[in-house]
Image (cartoon, rainbow, N blue to C red; front, side, top):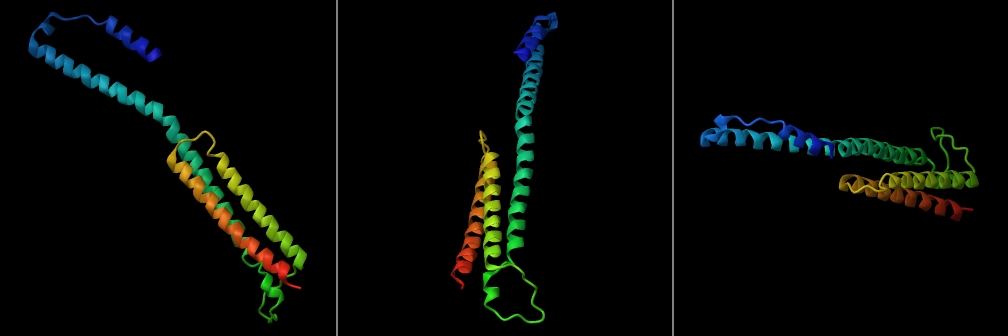
Length: 162
């Protein structure tokens, strides 16, 4: 609205020169005017899109951090293998002091953290139509779901042991 009013004001203040009446001068002036209008339109479009571009950059950075969190959760539970209770320990074996119940609880917490990570990523998709962001959110949800599935396999193995 303000932009339209300022353009109208600018055109109302223009004073027509008599030299514009020739065809050659009219073509030159109209070409310059069309170029200026095109540049102003491109500038308005860029400014209109700038906010979306900045938001996309911030959201993608946050989603990358959530993906990193999911991998860190997975990395910490990798050594929590229920089969270590069945194998004889050597002198170089790492000390593992979790009981069967503690291990199940720990793995359950890891699964819950992955679920929360997936839910936080989904919140970033709220009212967002950017395909890149939605694809990234979907990828994080698949990652968290598959990692959680592996954890639940460990919980199932742990519960089968005596």
